[in-house]
Structure formats: C-alpha cells, structure tokens
Length: 235
Image (cartoon, rainbow, N blue to C red; front, side):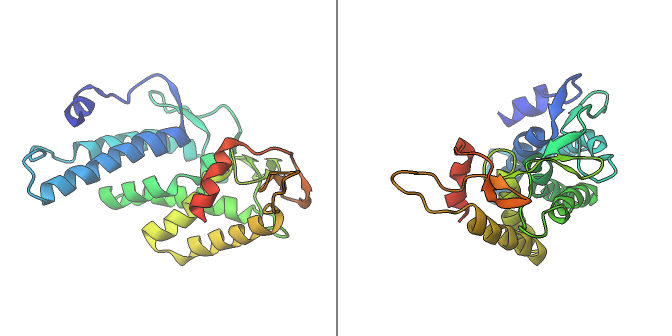
C-alpha cells in the first residue's frame, strides 16, 4: 500500500480542496504512515528497509501547497485552496474547527521536517481564535471572518463547526507540552460546563445545547448534532 501511494499519488491537481480536511486526513495520514515505517525499521523489520522518508517528503510537499491559504491579515486560513495554482478562497470566512484544528499535524510536520513555518502558522491561527473569544463567557462562535476577525455566526457549542478546536487544544498540550494550550482548554471547558452543560431530564433529554457566545443564557437551538458525541471521550 505504501509503495502504491508513493508511486501513484500526485498532489499537483487542479482542484479546490478543504485545508482542514486535507490536513487532518492526508497530511495526518502520511505522517502517521511515516512514523509507522520508522517504527518498523527501528524494530529490525525486513518489510520497510527500502523506506527513505518518502511519505514525509510527500507531506512536506502537500503542506507547502496549503501555505498560501494562510496569507490573510489575521492568520486565519482560507477554508479552501487550489492545489495546482495555489489560489485560495474565494470565501472570506471559515469555521472555528476548520481554522483551529491544524496544530497537531502542522507541528508534527515542522518537527519531522525541521521547518518551523507550519507549526508557526497553525499556532497563529489557533491563538487568534482564542483571543477572539467572548471575554465574558469565554466561549467562541462557529463562523469567523478571516480578514477582520468578526464572528459571523455566534452560536457556541461542542458540535459541528467548533468540536475539534477544543480537542486540538487538549491534544496539543499532550503532544507539545506547552501549558498555554492546557490553560486555554481548561478555560473553555469550564465555560462549556457552565453554560452548555445543563442536565437532561426524561421530559427534555438533551444536554450541551448550543448557546450564543455573547448571550450564553440564551439557547441558540433546541437539538443536538451527531458530532457532539465526541465530548464524553474528551472528558
């Protein structure tokens, strides 16, 4: 399978791709394969003796193709980019999860490649979202303008549009050891428990219903989406 990926996969494609999805699935997958290959080699396996960092090199190439997406005044990346032309956009907004779920793969890419640019850009985007939180509620919204930082959609929850932002903060602390990530996670975690974590009842079997980040006492909707199911695992 690794040989086929190295031989047949080309990223020079005239297609617009999601920066978020390409990062977590393709770059993440390539780096995971690279780590697995190194582990096999270190354990004196005969299966990957031929391996010479090809998957890492592919992840670097793909990471470089995503870099123009970060050319914004805030550091928040465009949600999409053309892999062939390097043209990002044209949408001027992105979701919190899309911009805030890059640090794990980009930091790993920087550490493996020796190029700090990937981690620097991912951290800048993640930090910008943190600084744009509502200072009263410590909650973030769902959709943000990548040029001026204004919240376009102020619904705040743990489901679609925000979910993996929280996850990335916690995992970034585990991977990188920076206590600032843990501080941010704990701050958001407390806010989620305070404003979203109302206990469910038989008559109303819902919890963690979204609120408005600037008016956390007001419910933004009266249903739960499937992506909220990850939250107990994070707890």
